Length: 209
Image (cartoon, rainbow, N blue to C red; front, side, top):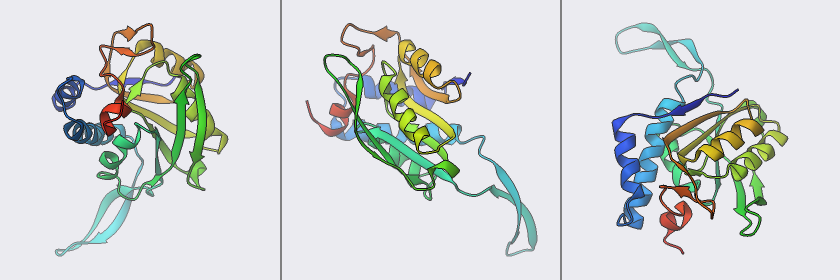
């Protein structure tokens, strides 16, 4: 079973509290989501493999550790997941970026795919699937289905706020995927929104209703 990591870093908790506030502007919300993604990526990449290489410093030759290849892909779930990409690219600028487009049917609450474009070598990459919210878990599970169908094997899911129901669904659907979360919330309401949550992340990122 994949592990679930809930961050307790003070900066992540502080910034997550700020994006929950109704008075947070679109501009501030967007910047905070980017900053949270950067902080989370710092920890989520802790286990990337390293190799020892020889370099020359201004003083001498030296053996140092560097990433064993930079074979990383970031795959946001559209549209809200886009808000986390730049924050991750700040740390991993050579990562390739794919996109999976899903929307939730308002009647069935099930995910419907409308777009999927991934790097051709996705099967050789460590894949970070990102979405600010993990509510029912249906969209995340479906997105990972599509990514696995393209050959990806090493997948991590990263979100800012998650409901217990969504975590359970994602773990059951993809027990090999580790989940990184900034905040684990109480529950889903009757409309399948996370409580206390922050409302609709896409609307708050892009100023839409």
